[in-house]
Length: 99
Image (cartoon, rainbow, N blue to C red; front, side, top):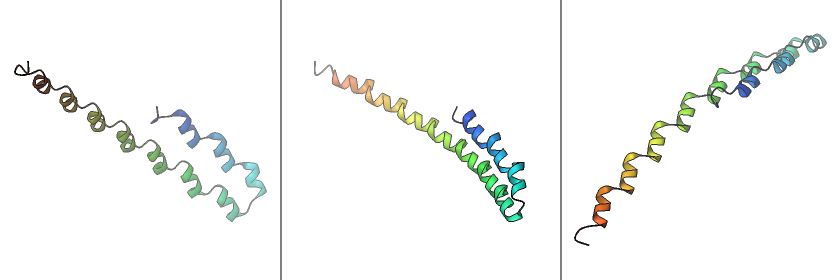
């Protein structure tokens, strides 16, 4: 859900936000090339829907660290669990010689 979150994706390609950038009324009031360029600047627009920025939000590598199979294996590792309740260790505790 965090990878393909509809709410997060909607913020990137929001129709209302895009309308403010290329608003006909706002553009008509300010026909200045320099000022108009700041409103509909390619660099500024790229920051909103930037592929690199979007990749960081839904980055496969970053998501892999959260739910990493290797990391999860360390938490519930079969070998680690075997050391806690090891049959050999249990046999030493209830040794026939001790009995």
